[in-house]
Every structure is written in structure tokens, then in C-alpha cells.
Length: 452
Ligand SMILES: *Cc1c(COP(=O)(O)O)cnc(C)c1O
Image (cartoon, rainbow, N blue to C red):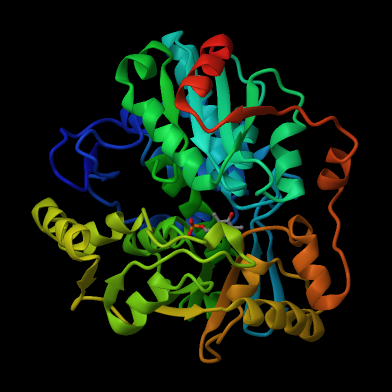
């Protein structure tokens, strides 16, 4: 299987190359050159464990990784999860399920993709006998998940920049209390935007980036998308047969990565009825699906910070399919969005996508209502998904984070503080972080000292 760029100016590459490069050289995102029809295989996959199903599914795409290696990588990736089902599907009402995606090492769904990606990178480095230094900026969850994906892996180091004092105390502990020598958490004096600017400056220095084999943490690696399709498939196979073709997945959404992974699976022949894009007050995608207009706005902080995004970077992949896989049309639409800040679609399939937007008041009220109705505690991101559920459909809500990661918001809503052993344990470990100015030269000097 080869991978093509949404912008059409990159020659097709193998899976391993697409993973190693991340972003295509023409600035586009990689996608499989054709999508398989997996519907004939569904009956045989019904009783597979998560890791078995994941290996079967990914082997269709990772055709240049030996089968036994892929199996090992998958087992290692999901062996760090604490629930035997990896992604347990819980029924909380006759037509309502929650798919719990928070049993990985950092208690958020990003572990599904980043545990797998970390092990893939580790294997690729060992194969080529080459090191890799991963560099990223984070406002919280992605940095923690990326760190735990590479923790202690030979030939790798990871440098994560975050704004001092502006990530939650627990998120900071997840990044700084790992005890691993190849993890470097850098607290910069400045905002998240400053951290991103420094990162851009460092990557713009091509000779520095090449000298240290720098690689970016980002949400656009094709391996992340495909690893995320697996839990939709797993959940669908676990639903009672009568519910399967009536199912709508309800997905707390920021970058459109998670919901795109589900939609892609539908395109491969899994009969899913629809997807509901659940946003917080940063509602660019809700506006898109209700008014057909894509128009970015300002980012406002919310109770669900990992969804505080107004540029949905994975949206370009969806655009590619919506525009009949024509890179020429993708480039034209992107140019128009860049020039005017907006685009009007006349081609959105309303029967597949629906959407909702939850204000901070809604989030607090939803946490309370879900707790009172179902005796189930949801985190602020997951809470957004409970807004305006469609009673005609069977809903599977994707729970993207463990509620214990957001104790203040939960306490304010229901007067209790959920806990998780993995987080409690962190509190007894020393914080190791490096305070540096938001300055590319200072960060480069630091990287030079510690790069592998
Ligand atoms: C990253 C994140 C999201 C948003 O996921 P996207 O793939 O960007 O749509 C939602 N919830 C939590 C807890 C997250 O960490």
C-alpha cells in the first residue's frame, strides 16, 4: 500500500516513509492511495481481542512491516493499558454506550495513537541504526502522551516545550515525573503561542534540524489516524447486531483527527450510520456542519482545553475525499480559505454528520446531569458529547479523557473529586523540568547538549 499527499505534489511513498516523514514535502497530509473494502472480513473479526484486531487491521496498511514485527509493536503499544479490553464499551442506558478511551498511560485517548507511533519510531530507529530527537510544543495532553510514547526507548529523545504555569498541575506532573533520562520537559517563560513560535524557528533552521534528526510531534501522522480507526471498529464489533447499523458515534472534537479516523472506517465498508462532531465553545466545526460555512475565528479558553482549536488540521484529509480525491481542488479550496478566512461547502453529507457545541455552562450542567442520570462521571471533553443526543439513534459516546485529569471542573459540577491510581502515584515523584526563556537560541543550545 502506497501513500499519497492531499496536495498531489509528492510522489507516493511507503507506509514506513509516510510515518517517518509525517507531513508530506508539499505541505499536504498523507492518505492511503486507495481504501480497502473490509466488509467481507467483519464476521471473522468479531471475537478478536483488541491487539489481535489492531494487528489484522493495520497489516492492510503497513504492508512494508513484517507481520511478526507489527504484531510485537501492537502488543507492546497496548500492553501499557490498564483495562483488559483496552477500549471497554460500557452500556449506560438502553440506547447509549460510552467507549472508554482513557485506560492508557496518560489517561487520555491520544495514548492509542502515540503509544503505537512511539513504538514504530523505536523500531524504525533500530532498523536504520539511527537516532531521532522528537520536538514538540504542548498546551497539555499531546505532550504528555508523546512523552509516554517514547519513554525510555533507545536511540530516541523527546523535548517538549510548554508554557510555565499554564498547563494543569496534573498534566505537568505527567510530563515531568517520568524519571526517564530521554525525556526533557522544558517550561518556557511565555504562552503556548510563544512555544509554537520557538518551535517553528528551530525547524526553520534546516541544518540544525538535519544535524540532530529532529522530528515534530504533531497530530497529522497517518499512523495516528489508522491506529485510531481501530477502536471504532472494535466498538462496532462489540455492539449487539440490532444496534450496529443504527449507531452514531459522538466524538468530542478539536483537530478533527479522532472523528476523521471513524469516518475513514465507514468509507471502508463498515456500516456506521453517522458521526456527531461535539465541540466546545470553539465551534468552527459545529458552524461548518450547521451552516456549510468554514470560517475560522479566535480561540477562547474553555473547560475542555484540548479542544480549544479553531484550525482543524486533519480537516484537509476529509476535504480531499469530499472533493473527489482531487489535489487540484484541495489546493484551490485551501488557497481560498487562506485568502478570505472562509469557504462555503455545497457538498456536505448532512445525513452522515451532525454536530453540537457546548458552552462552559453547558459542560458543567452536562457533567452533573450525566452523573445524576447514569451515576457515571465524565470529564469536561466527554461532557460536550452529551449535548443534544439524538434519541432516534443508538449513540456511542467516545470518552476521550479520564475525569480524574480534571478534578477542579468535576468538583465544581458535582462536589466530588474522582481519583486514578496512576495520577496519585505521580504526586509522590519529583518534578524534573527545565526553565528556559522562549528563545530559539537557548532551546537549541539545550537540545545540542542532550540530543541522542
Ligand atoms: C486531543 C483531545 C481531543 C480532541 O481530539 P482531536 O483529534 O483533536 O479532535 C478531545 N479530548 C481530549 C481529552 C483530547 O486530549
